[in-house]
Amino acid sequence: MNDFDQILDDSLRQIASGAVNADECLAQHPEYSVQLKPILQSARLLGRGRELTPSGAFKTRARDQLMDHIRAHSHGKNGKLPLIWTIAISLAALAILFFVTGTAVAQGALPGQALYDWKLTSEDIWRATTPDRVGVDLELADRRISEITSVSSDSANEAKAIAGYKEVLTRLNSENDVKNNDRILLTLKSNQIKLSAVGIIIPELNKHISP
Image (cartoon, rainbow, N blue to C red; front, side, top):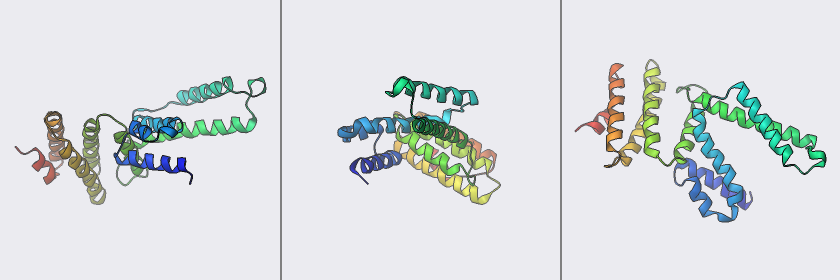
C-alpha cells in the first residue's frame, strides 16, 4: 500500500468513526487534497443517498450526461474515447448508480434483513459528514424506534434493534446541553409513547427523560 492509499484508508476510517469530518481530513493532508477531495465528497453524497430514489430515467440521463462530459473533455482523435475507456466509464457510471440506488433501498431494511448492515454503514458515513450530528442522531433514534416496533414479534431482531437504539441514546446523552435539550427531549418523549403503545419498556429511555 502506497502513501496515498494509506492516507485514504485512514481518512475514510476516521470519518466513518466520527473522529473527523471530510474538511478536517483535507486540512491534515494538503499534499493529497486534489486526490482526496472528490473521494471524500462522494462520502458526503452517500450520506445524502438515503434521500434518493433514482428512477430509470434518472439513471439513463445521468449516464448519458457523464459520457457527454467525458467526450467533451477528451483529447482523443475526433473527440472520441477509445473503446476500453468507453466500457470502463460505462461500468463505473452504472456501479455508482447502483450503489446510490442500493443505499436508498437499504434505508427501509430491518434487523435480520440482508441490507440492514449496509443501512447502518451509510448512516455512519452520513453522521460523520454532517455539521448537525444531534439532528442526525434524533432521526436515527426515530428509525430505531420504527425498527423495534416492526420486529417486536421476533425477540432476536427486537433485541438487535433495541441495542441500536441504546447506542443512539448514549450519544444523545453526551450531546445534551442547553442548546439541544428541548429537541432531544421532544424526540425521546415521542419515542417513549410509541414504545408504550406496543408494550415495550426501555429503562434507559425512561431514566433519560425523567424529571
